[in-house]
Length: 169
Image (cartoon, rainbow, N blue to C red; front, side, top):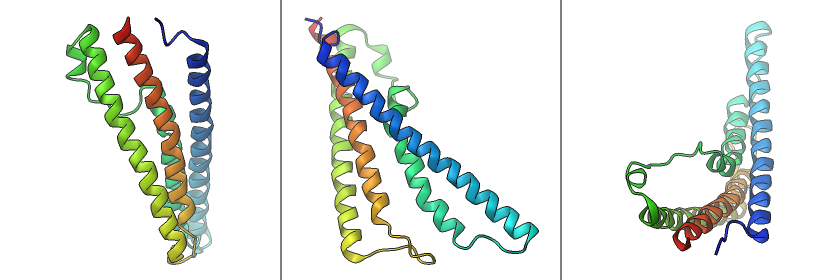
């Protein structure tokens, strides 16, 4: 039985890659905004003696968008941190079993992280927490992290299904 060759799995994998790519583009756009803000701040402070007010706050909250947006696609592309010193030494079904164990732990971590960060965002809404100088509300950025953890969970599910398929072979 080949799970990874089925139509539903292929569609699920393509959807996950597409969603991860869209979120990464959002992160890249945020990175471009950070560059423009830094440019305006430096040029403004050096040439006109007028730095951009709140540039560090703006950069700080936009970093959240840039970093969290790349979660899923970094895992898909193999750019995510992975400790493979044990898994790489094992072959066959043993390797697939370790991959399953690793995927289950990762899935649990990111599912709990998503839930906890969204819960934290709700608490930020209830408290009305904002940045100090510009008063930028912080809850949208907590929600963004939680939302970006969901595609990461989908990528891990794809890896988990692939590893289960290897054990079944």
